[in-house]
Length: 348
Image (cartoon, rainbow, N blue to C red; front, side):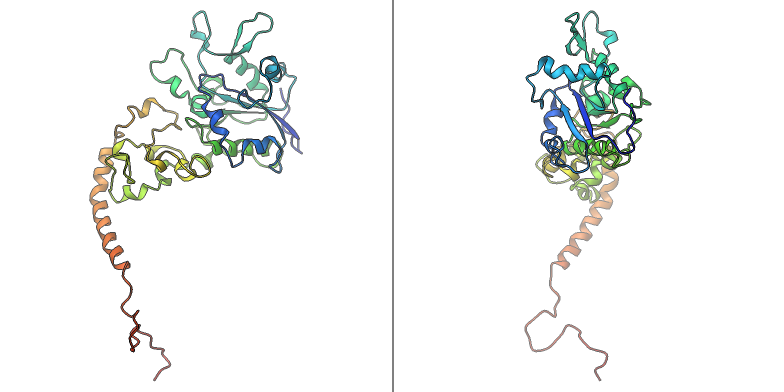
């Protein structure tokens, strides 16, 4: 087991990142677009106060692959590498129901030559890791691969290890959902974990679903530029409209996500910002509880009906006020008499 963080913090930290869960590697690809901070800035030591970081990720690795790439993973599994943060990408399948094969693997057993199931790596690495981070909705809650009817019995990392799991550093699993993950959400959280490892920050605050509170504490609707249209009972009828999209399938009012406020790359983009509906991809119930996509969410018809009379009245009143506010006061003129009402009290 890796020792807890010393009083002075760690000076170096390995990141062992496995994306061989049931996955498309979309989270790894997404993170390459991060800028707050950029992953290359963290690796190159350009962020003050962090330990020196050694990243081991198949897409971002400078190695030629094969055993050269697997070496730190094998060393960590033997308890010979530390401290390290274990990052898991992709859903965790149930290997107890795999028949005579396996669902997904990472490397081969050097003795038998047989593929090593990802679950074996999780069981070897997670208890030894100073921190465990699940990236993307597949790894956090199961995601697409865990939807009803799947044959793999997929689940999230906390479902597999247990929601009360604690790393060797005493931390719960850190879940950063998204399909794929918003790049800066991941890098900001990882940076906080690294600051904590360096002894320069407390543990990151997490909600009951182990998500960073400061990132997932508000709903899409509460941060959405279209939210005012909802208040005014003004709803889009198609995807070309700038108005609230609840009637065309948006789940924003009940989904915990900060993308409307943060954007996607460099503060630009994000589903409702570019005309897309929110389909709840950051939520534990995704995708089952949000299907069929594009249909109005349950309760949407009731909520829009209730807000309609208020919204129509408020919209009309605001229109009248807007019209009067777009007119200059009468005393702004170039005539000889002052008509602004200026009348100092000291005048006789």
